[in-house]
Length: 370
Image 1 (cartoon, rainbow, N blue to C red):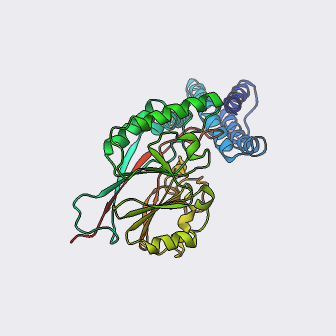
Image 2: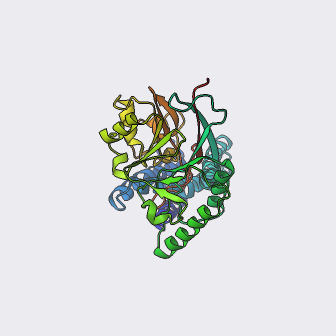
Image 3: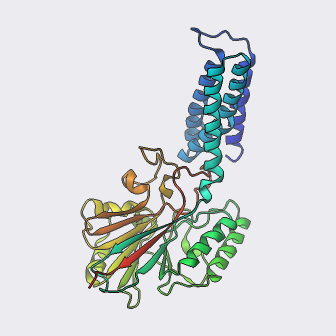
C-alpha cells in the first residue's frame, strides 16, 4: 500500500496528460480538457473504491487512494489544463480550473503537514454533586487518547510537555499507543515512550491509568512503572472522591455491564468509566445509564476529516456522528467525553486531519458550591 497510492496517482496523471495530447475531438461542444478531467476524476473515485475494497480489503485504503489520487493526480492535471486553456485564451475557464486545483493542493498540504500537528488543549468544567462541596480548586483530569504513532519524535515530545505543564491530578489514557510497521521500530518506540513518562516533572498524584486499545495492549507498549493498567477493574483513588473503572477493549463496545452499574451505585463519590471505543456510551443515550458519572473514550480520532455541515464521514463506531466527532456532552446526569486524540491512524489510512485538530482534553471537576 505504501507504493500503491502514489503509483495510482501517477498513473492517473499520466493518463490525463496522454489524453490531452491525443487529438480526440470534443463532444457536444464540450472542450476536450473538461472531458479529460471528468474521466480522470471518475477513474480516481471508482478505482479507489475497487482497489481499496477488493484488493486491500480496507475502507482506510479507499480513503488513502482517493486522497493521493486527487492531490497528486487530479489537481496537478487541473493545473496543466488551466495553463493549456490560458494559452488558448480561454481566460475564464483557465482561472476557474486553476483556482480550484490550487485550492485542492493547498487543502491537501494543510491536511497532511499542518493540522495533524496543530495540537489543542481543550478544557471542560464539570460540576458534580458527588464531589465534596466548596473546594476552591478543581480536580484536574487530563485525557491523552490515541497517541497511535510509529515513532517518538518532536511532536510526541511536545504532547508530553503540554501534559506535564498542566500539573493534572489524574491522567487517563483510553488506548492505542504504538502502531509500528517493524519489530525493530516498535522496540525503539517502546523504550522512547517509557522515557517520556519517566522524565515527567509533575507526576499526577492520583496516577496515570491506561486501558487497552485496538492496535496494541497497554502493558505491552507502555513499560514505565509510573503507568498503571486497568482491564474491567474498578479502583478507588484515595480520598479524592473519585473512583475509576477501566474497560477492556471488547467491553468498550458493549452496553455498560450490571457490575459497573453496581460499582457506581455503591460509591458515594464520582465514578469515571474509561474505555477505548465510545460504543459503551450508547447505554447513557438510551437511558440504561442514568447515574451521575463521567464516561471517557477515544478511538474515533474525531473522524480525522470533518465535512462542514455533515461531520466525519468515517467514525468506526456505532455512536451518533455528533458524539464520535468528539467533545464533552451531557446525557441526563451522565457526562460523555470523546477525545479526538493526538495521533493518526496508520497502516492503509492517509495520515491527515482536516477541520479536526488533535487535542488533549482537560476535565476540571468541581463539587457543588457551599
